[in-house]
Image (tube, rainbow, N blue to C red; front, side):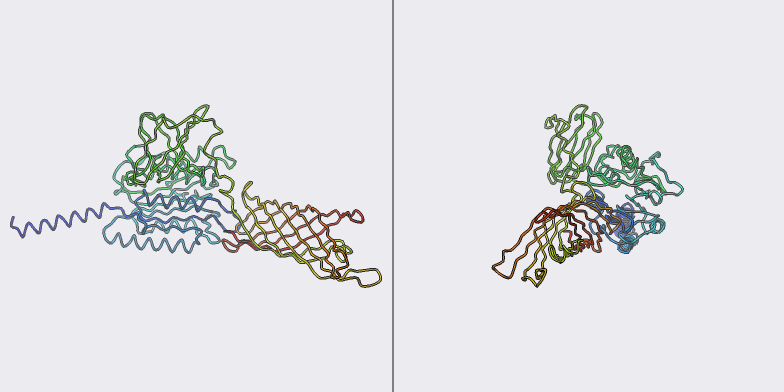
Length: 530
C-alpha cells in the first residue's frame, strides 16, 4: 500500500474509532428537586430538601454526572422545574447531535396529591410529567419520585408493585427507553424517619447506590439492583409503622438487553472496605449527628465496599444481646478498612443511632408583637387596671419536644397617662404601666402555609401607678396569671411568619378584697425564621 493510501486508511480508522467512542459514551444529565412545602391542605415535610441534596451530591460523586450537567432545585415552583428540564433537554439534544448517547434522570422528593406533584403552591400533573419524559431527547429517561401516592404514575402496562423480574446482563449502551420508580403505591403515603434524617425510600435508595445494593460484587450498582434493594428495605422498615407498609413501584419500557449502571463505586478513590473475614450481619454507618448515612448487609466471606464520603463515622452491628460499635475515619483520596478488632461490645443503651436530636430537627423564630390588653370588668378597666396597648419581643422554638409543638417566651410593655378617678373630684395624674413576661406551649395543625394553633400560657404581670405628685407614693402590683391562647400562623414567605392570636387570662386580685378577674389580649406577631 502506498504512503498516501496508508494515510487515508489511518484517518478512516481514527474517524471510525472516534465515532464508536462517541457511540459508547453515555452523557448523563440530572434534575434533582426537593420541596418541603406542598401548598394548601398539606403539612410541611422535614427532610425533602435534605434528600434532594444527598441525591445531587451522590450522583455527582459516583453517578458520572458532571456538575454542569446537574440541576438542584430546592423549594422551586413547577415553572422553575419545567424551565430546568427544558435546559437539560436542550443540552441532551446537542450531545446527541455530536453522536453521544444520553441519559436523563429526574429525581423529586416532596408532596404529591390528587394526581400531581405539589411544588409549593404550584402543581405539575403526573400525566403531564410522564408525557414530557416520554418525549424527552435522551436515549434513557429515568424518573424517581419520592412522594405520597406517586405510584399513580405507574398505573400503566408494565407497572409492578414488587421487584419480581430480572434484566438480562449486558452493556448499558444497549438500553433505551423510559423507567419510572416511585416510593409508594397509588394509595399509600410515603413516610419520613427522624432516625434516618430523610424518607425511608430515598435513604435506602441512596444507601444501595453507595454499595449495599451491589449484590454482584462488581463495584457497580445498576438501576434494578438499586430499586430491588430500596423496595425490600423500605417495605421491611415501614411494615410496623403507624402508616403501614409502604410499597415502592416501577414502570419500565426498555428496549435492548442492557441495564443502566447508576453508580460506579470504582469512580471514587475513597470509601470503606469491609473485608471478607469480617463477621456477617447488618452494619450501620452513623454520622456525628447520629443519623444513619449508609447500611451494609454483609454475607460471610465476601468483601464489600461502601463508597462513603470523607469523614468520621460510628459503626454499629447489632447482635442478639448487645451491640458491636466502633469508629472509622475515611480520609480524602484513600480507602479505609474496617477492622473488627477496633470494635467493642456495648449495651443497647449506647446505640449511636439517636435520630434527630433535640435541636437537630427543631427551628427558631424571633419577632416583634403588638397587642391590646383589656379587662372584662368595666369598673376594673376604667379605674384599676386600664386598657393599654402592648409592644413586645418574642422567641419560639418549633418541633423540639415533638413535631408541631411550639414553646415560646415573650416580653411586652405598655402604658398610658391617666387621672385617678375619685368620688367627688378629679384625682391626681399618674402614669399607668404594664410589664408582661410569659411562656407558652401550644400545638399547631399545619395546612400548607397556614397553621391554626391552641395552647396554654403562664404570664407574670407587673402593674404600676407612678404619680406626677412626688408626695404621693407610687403603687405596684405583681402576680402570676394562667391563660389559654389560640390563633393562626401564616407564612407568606419562606423566612417570614405572620401570626394573629387571642389570649384569655385569669387573675386573682387580693389587695383590698379577693376578686376573680379576667382579661383578654388581641395581637399580631411578625417573626423571622433564620
